[in-house]
Image 1 (cartoon, one colour):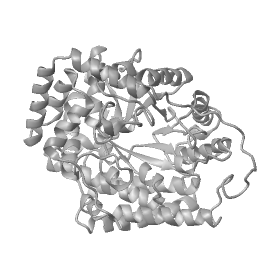
Image 2 (cartoon, rainbow, N blue to C red; image 1 turned 135 degrees about the vertical axis):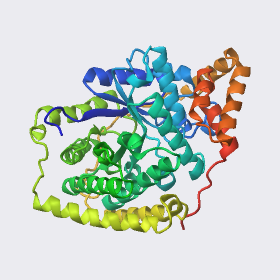
Image 3 (cartoon, rainbow, N blue to C red; image 1 turned 30 degrees about the horizontal axis):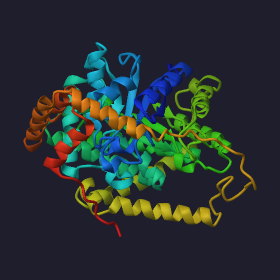
Image 4 (spheres, helix red, strand yellow; image 1 turned 180 degrees about the horizontal axis):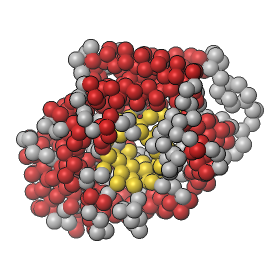
Length: 482
């Protein structure tokens, strides 16, 4: 673990325009972060351009607005993509943003085999907990498998998926539910890739996972241990993986945003530190620590720097990196690991009693289970059975004033103007022909990422590419869970 080098300190950031986010990335790199993690705004996450009516009021709000290759160039201006590792939290249009990143890298003279990073690309958890899906499950799984195959050839060091329990936990999942539903999704992705003709040991070493770290430190350490045990067993016994790298559960962790409070926000610094300790002692490969003001607004520059400094203190001023496994032999943690493992395996079995993880999603199983857990937690907080410092105990009468970071509302008009110029200056006939080729590939069995790349190179927008696929594959209509 960390005796030779610490975990990757990868701080999640992105807001407003590509220029503003680029400035924040340079600040983080100068402060000592080891990798970038890109947050996209909701229109980008849903495959819409900034000038579409449905995007009104959301442009640049919870992440950066990326409409075309021009925005991606600005986002990574003066950042050497052969020397930095980049994670992108993007799912339904994950392949689109990955290709834009690759195209910008090529313009820097960086070939695909020199790129390192991760796209989240985990569409199944969107149906369960988060909601930024576009297409129905089956074509979405095809797009994931096409991305696996494309990256194996074109971007071989890229982590093609980050199978995420974090968002389920933020929606209310317990630790057992978090790892059970995440690993069930992972099994579904492996099955889809094998069905598409890929050899398990050719793609499994590039799979990665994404979990939450809560303040219940010992339970979180046990959760991470149980998840590793289960995944290794599944990969060996169900899928016959021979490469030990295929058995590994490599994961990124983010501290629990849902546990942060807007009341007495400085207390969140303590919460985040406790959460980070659980992730580190649980063996995370990569960590994002939340800023103390995230329950109020996008982090200020000072808050983002303090979040990074939290990791640096833990890495360089404590002795956490002096031993491979600080909880080895702990009776409490080993017993908790056994318990969580058994409960998670039983829950995975219940998922696949529906037939597949997708069938369970379509039946609303995972969503119902998580919503029930969230409701129980809310009742416990309301009754003060579960203490939240500053919220239901140890409160103060008057909160200190706080000036949040605000996104300039003019960003939406600026992005729309950029799109007008883009469409006026590009070769629209060539773009139209490239989008036709993308539609033809989507109708057939060809890997859609190759015609998609050409369309994006010709300055097709994120929205235009996603609309082309919507026209072939349709959109997902969720089933009510109650």
